[in-house]
Amino acid sequence: MPITDDLKKTLTDPTPLYALAGAGDLAYEKLREVPGKVEEITADRKAAQERAAARLQEAQTRLAEAQTKVTETVTTLPTDFKVLQERAQGFALQQVGRAAELAVKAKEVYDELAERGKVVVDRGRRETAKQIEEKGATFESKASSVVDEAVVKAADVADGVAGAVAPEDGPAAKSAAKPRAARKPASSKPSTS
Image 1 (cartoon, rainbow, N blue to C red):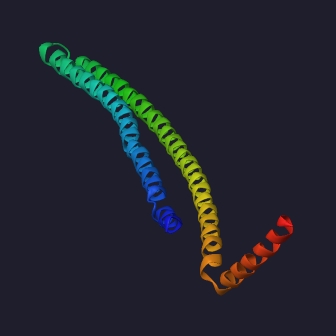
Image 2: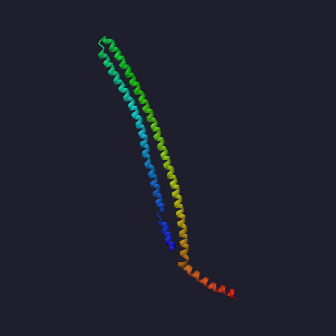
Image 3: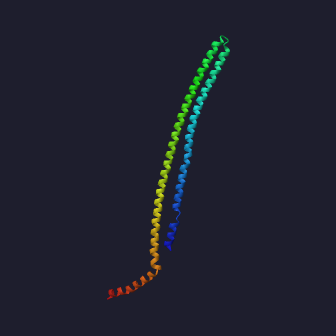
């Protein structure tokens, strides 16, 4: 019976399942880190967008200030309205040009940062996928070797159980036991004479 108990214990041992569950939990833990990294990248991208938006807002503010100054200048000078009007229009156009230039630069910076962010995110995804594949391969290799060892041990135990049970219970074992007993006394006679 102890051999049968050992066999049952070996075949019902939950340790390989626990190892599998532990590996799954580890993989889940690592996958939970991915959104944090994505959020970090997204935050960096948002910060870049905010800086670009701030520059654009600054350009618009300057434009508004320039337009206000032009309007004030035109209204405060009562002499030669045509000359003043031309100067005001020239100044306004100049400020509009500067504002457009700043807007273009802000857009360029924004596009560069977006492209850079895309490269970073893609690289992070590839690295994360590679790490997950490596962990999976390692786990698969370890799980395969554990299963192979368990199969070999179970086969060894089964062979041992089969060898231990067959001679005692089978009819061949009984007939084999009788000739041994018959031979024993015959072999003891020559040793005594």
